[in-house]
Length: 305
Ligand SMILES: Nc1ncnc2c1ncn2[C@@H]1O[C@H](COP(=O)(O)OP(=O)(O)OP(=O)(O)O)[C@@H](O)[C@H]1O
Image (cartoon, rainbow, N blue to C red; front, side, top):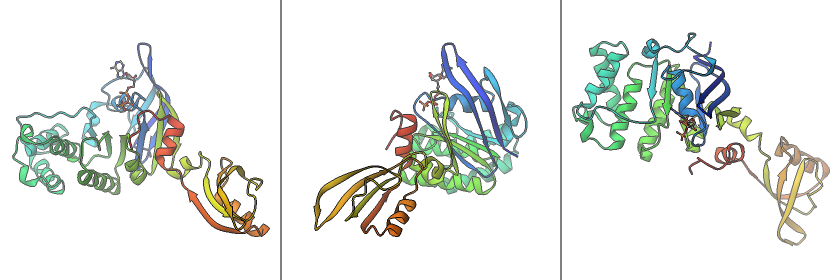
């Protein structure tokens, strides 16, 4: 059973079609990257899942039921707009959120302390949020979303504002939640995190789904590029879309930059060369990164290096 099922979801704000006929599912234990440029509709979708705003049409099922704030005991959410009570201590903040989600104080305190230890903040448990750095406060807020060991963890831009060490801590927490069986959805503009973590990803463009699948499936949408050195003209090989010579040949050996037809696997061209007796001296595949895929499928806006 899916933890989250979104079907033909539409959200209009006046003239703005923020979410346009969006459908997807997320299974237990799955890490699902929710990617798209600025204004693509990511936050709007997450807010509908949380029942903060209502869809114009379409349906959402969270843990087998329509969104309802009473489900909060099974959900963890890190909002894009961070904000906690400045005058409350870190541990009291986590306990407060744990209580809101139906936990007893002792369990919330024990889990809160475990999380603060993992986040390297145990010695700041009694510090007020207002006295903490932005990144520290963000880790406390992350702890509030994890304290109830949610079955559905939704993190809106969780990496922004964290230094590389804390980004690594966050990656570990995402993996840990998924290993525990939670479905994890996170939105990001930073493709490397999505590339490392996601089992599947969804690319959203102007409210519409542009792609959903694994990273490998996303890669298959783009033509493969290969650098090759051969004593043979490679332009006419089957599966080659274009081949441009690089520099002048040396002793009859020419370097080529080759683009294959979409969907053609580099191995099939390599196999053809070997069975046809075409000699190759060098063969380097350039695998498309998620950054390349994002720029190609969604457009360049809203992607960070
Ligand atoms: N409450 C609202 N009233 C009017 N328009 C809204 C409202 N909330 C969102 N929108 C519009 O809906 C569209 C989608 O916004 P949303 O915040 O969901 O995008 P996003 O993908 O989260 O973007 P970002 O990466 O910039 O956070 C935008 O055009 C935005 O202006």
